[in-house]
Image (tube, one colour):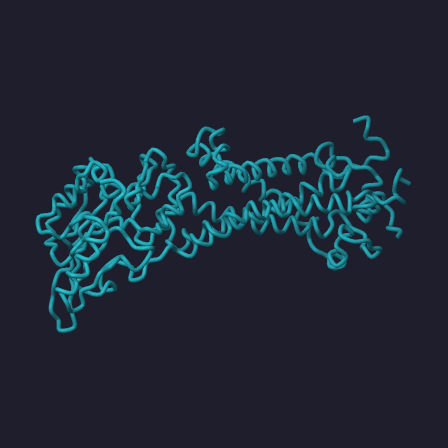
Length: 262
Length: 210
């Protein structure tokens, strides 16, 4: 299954929020649970954590007519093609895999935390004890071994499926057409296309913590594409000018009338 | 100290020299460990320091030393580096470095170029320290502050790094006889008459003669 560009499709309209994926993810990745307290929602833990790489968000949604419904959204790494975290990472711990996902080699992570603010989806989470960053790697090792990610394998409703890009995108658009109304495909139109694609029942802006138009932040672009090269270009240019000055004007000698003192 | 006879003039005291070298040492360590952390092709520097993780902590530690020495340098040199009206004239004449000129105003302790260097390092030093503190633990700051600290840090490094190259050139081969000011503390009388005539005259209890 190597060298295929994978897409994981999350059809939120089929999700019942059973949280099997959340448990399967923890189990496969051997992540411990953290003690949490009830905060007035079924959503648990309250947010993604270093040890919780995927989370079902429970959102109470009331439409214009006053009808109530749940919006369930499986949150986690979107595996961007143009990933801000990879751009920000100084050590190469975060990297683009040959299957289009964003991998994380935790041994290489130096805990600089640059990725945590760079990510437009607020995904990488830092662990103070290990001084490392954690996030979903779309079960990279399982995919390479020809197996589905743990979350997909655990999904009983068919909300989670994975496959090659072409098949999955067609499936996504077919499903949206079938659903009609406000249903929309989310993920292929920004950051070079994500490798986790949502089918949303409502417009993206209505979902909690889901950016309507995610981008690699301008700060990251300015930092990496402009200032970074210009540290060396600037110092090199100035050194070149100094060398030219030395060759053309020569060193600035003490005034001749002053030679030898008074 | 026998070589420091009558024709040598003491231009810096020991405190100035010690602060200068702590500042310079921590600054250069930060610069090169920073470049080593930022560029994959410069990873040999962190490798020599014991890896990227070790280099990260050394970079932070050196930054703390830089912060304290920069603060000390501010209070030590701010008076000498306060601009005066004649500085504009000095700059308008390129300090005599770029073309021949007879219109250079006599300099007191530091010329306008040195003062500019001081203030650029101060301003961008504050920028690099403040952004560095945010980058040390970005999680306790709002996202926007955390995000923009990175380009600010690298831009400040770019400015300070470029000024460092100018400083290195003008303090050594660009101005022969200058570097001893930061080693022995002495420069020749002729050097002082060229570079800081007003200061020399005041020191000798004389007025400046053009």
